[in-house]
Image (cartoon, rainbow, N blue to C red; front, side, top):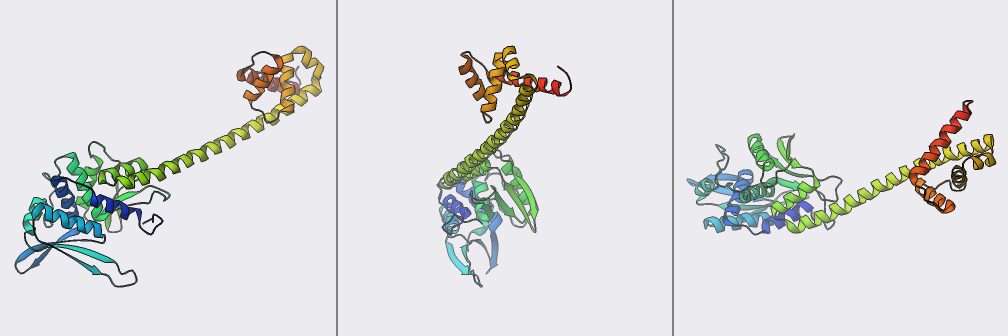
Amino acid sequence: MASTGNGISFARLVKEESARAERSESEKKAVLSSFVRINGYMKMGGGKVGLELSSENSAIAKCAYQYLHDLYGVEVRFSYTRSAGLLKRITYHVIVDDGAEDILSDLEVDFFNPEKPKEVISSSKEVAAYLTGAFLASGSVNNPLARSYHLEIALKDEGYAKFLLKLWSKYSPHPFSCKMSKRRNQYVLYIKRGDEVSDFLILLGAKDQCLAFEDVRISRDFSGIGNRLSNLDTANYGRVVKSSERQVAEIEYLFQKEGREHIQNKNEKLFALMELRLSNHDASLEELASLLSELLNTEITKSNVNHLFRYIHTHAEELKNGGR
């Protein structure tokens, strides 16, 4: 995951802010339901059924611990393990020894016969909380400084992934253009539009990180617009220069074939424009119209100038082809 520059990933900052967000009792239950479905497992021992949740993020583990305690008043144990190797990652464990079956039933989680929850997600706020739990369990989001926007939730169960995809895609009041792909042994749900990533951060309750994301996104998008405008200006300038070179060549040809005095006597406005073009190679049509208006003391439009240059081009071509 991309770093924010201080060694902490943007995804971690998002998850930690989301884990600290204020939620109602029903929202806490929805968060727990999806989190347990993805990151929980049952423990059998001593004739009892226990429940264990795990996370590498201490803020998320504390959130799960607190929600279980607040909602069910059960005794919850908290522990951690440290992996071997250079990284020595810490995994935090939240353990319920008694009352796990009742908790799983209330959360509508059945590891052996997975059913889609109904009561837990009966409102749009509860659906948002359910998606939040899924993201806290197995989600990730790119740093906005990365080359592309990307937020995902990776799942092992294809059936559950399809259910979550439908839930996410049809979330009200803001349906997301969520897609699914298979990556090795996982089913990955993802969104890639910057505005949708921003909206999902709000859904998670990560308002501060959404502001940080938007700040970078707006700066980057404005920079992109600036680059596109600069490229457009360069292209326009190139066209002006190319047209000017052709016009200068045609004017010099006409002066040589017909003479300056003849053209001046025939059409004073045309002659004045030809003289201005010869002394102002880089001028645009608008600039030439302004110069010509000032010179002749009458209003000359860009359209008039363009019309005169078309006449110059047509007349020069006729002379080159032997006509008069």
